[in-house]
Image 1 (cartoon, rainbow, N blue to C red):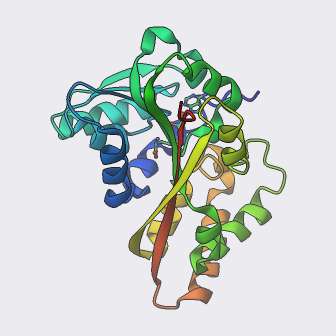
Image 2 (image 1 turned 180 degrees about the vertical axis):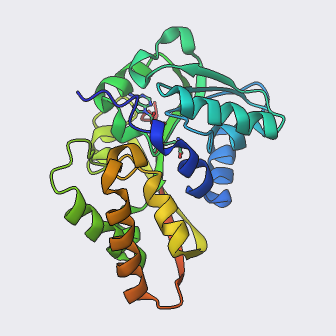
Image 3 (image 1 turned 60 degrees about the vertical axis):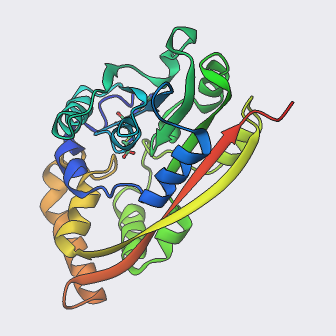
Length: 257
Ligand SMILES: C[S@@+](CC[C@H](N)C(=O)[O-])C[C@H]1O[C@@H](n2cnc3c(N)ncnc32)[C@H](O)[C@@H]1O
């Protein structure tokens, strides 16, 4: 398996600036569903800059946030400090979780499950998740995203610029993998965030990804930016895109009884 720990190192600044936070309703729904608050523990796996860890910590829950990428963790520590929240950050991979980390009410993967050895991690979580707790896998709804005008441009850029990308990981099959795990009862929750964004922001978001971060583009960056801006200008000459970004949360629990 490719070592994924370094993939986001060159993306961190763009990530912090351009990745949208998750819809509040979706996070609040998870908090209510699992009774997250004081006396409960949440583990944010592949936490990056803490987009899940921070709202969970605001409830008063104990939050452990892990990520193998130190610069991403540093961005998370900064976010926690700015929000005056106590969050435990550790440089670790999902595959290193074990019983000593338990017991968590919820283990959350925000845009990170596809980077892990999914089936193996879910079986490790047997010992980490409380009997009535669960696992949530949350990310943009890729089908809906690919349907937006900017989504179509982004998908076309991926096809044209990285046709054989070794790092590309599939989010397909998450639901099947969860259904074959100890957490086989899977519900789908959806939410969306309205977004008015400019060509600069589309570019910034793309530079925050493992595909197109500045380190990977290297000396192709200027040509990449020119190509993207030309395609976006054809789409909206005023350079402004009004769209809704859809999110999907797969909430997985053990079967009843
Ligand atoms: C796209 S970012 C997601 C950040 C954040 N959770 C969010 O919701 O936006 C994916 C993160 O997964 C981390 N990651 C990669 N491989 C991992 C693994 N095996 N275990 C845990 N995290 C991993 C990366 O370092 C990166 O910070």
